[in-house]
Image (tube, rainbow, N blue to C red; front, side, top):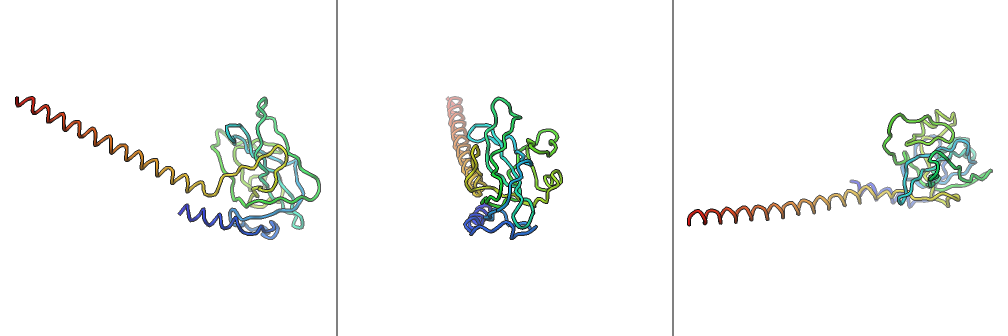
Length: 212
């Protein structure tokens, strides 16, 4: 099931990118390739914190874009940003050129989530968050935000890295777990057989000693 889902998603990713405006207010299929043209709204940049990469603490930068023609706003995951080692609360807004820009990527109904410890902080400009959904962002910002996120794959801005999880990771992870359990089961059977044989041999030796 997971492998078939991953295969379908990979086929979807290979399709020609569609203009984000063409979907209107509807929800495109997850991982549909899209491009968006519009103007950045950097004042409403927010950050998904506690997203380490290669052992380095960091966060995902989310910045809204007002789409050309429609006027709707699309929340864009622009990439991964290393955290300031001296001040974890310090945030840096990546370059956001004025005027019309174009970004390519994939539709995401929801970005990868992490465990939320304690009460979630309010969604404000520049907020450091554990998780975020578009409905909450729409309510907090007052912007006409679309119900999905664009996960950017086009050239990132300075200071950002694009390192998104693969759609096939779930199936591959499950297969790895299955092999691990199979290996552990086989090892347990071997130990059980050795232990049983030793007990059997010990019993026979004990009986022989008693009969003598």
